[in-house]
Image (cartoon, rainbow, N blue to C red; front, side, top):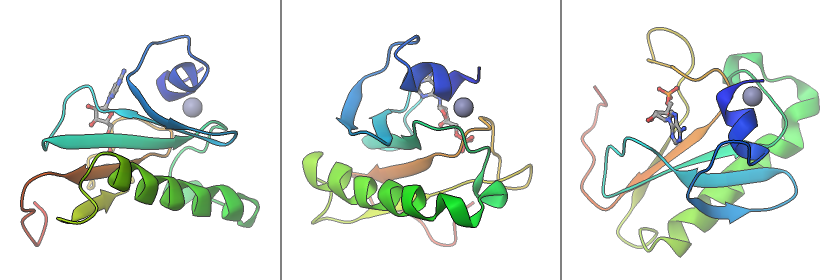
Amino acid sequence: MCIFCKIANKEIPSKVVYEDEDVLAFHDLNPQAPTHVLVVPKRHITGIGHAVPEDEIVLGRLLLAARRVAEETGIAESGFRTVINHGANAGQTVFHIHVHVLGGRPMAWPPG
Ligand code: AMP
Ligand code: ZN
């Protein structure tokens, strides 16, 4: 079982920000901004590049949960960034799809 499946199953502890039937949001262990939360589906999807039409609902729920995380962590008004890395060039290190929600400081564009 992959590390985010274990976190979703509560086999590995995490600092949970939001949870529902399909989605878990928890603080990143190595935050890259004052607020850095990861939103994952409880059901394993390897990455955005492996998503299929049957994932449509859960993909929408990930983004709605990201919005909720931004509101509940107080970064919605000042602005925040959502990121989904896929594959080597994007620097994906955990192969269970996750939406990064980053905020609390200005974000550079283009991203590095
Ligand atoms: P990515 O590079 O997009 O695959 O992002 C993986 C993210 O997962 C990184 O930001 C890591 O800091 C984070 N991460 C890895 N293990 C854990 C963990 N056990 N709890 C919370 N965040 C983690
Ligand atoms: Zn998984």
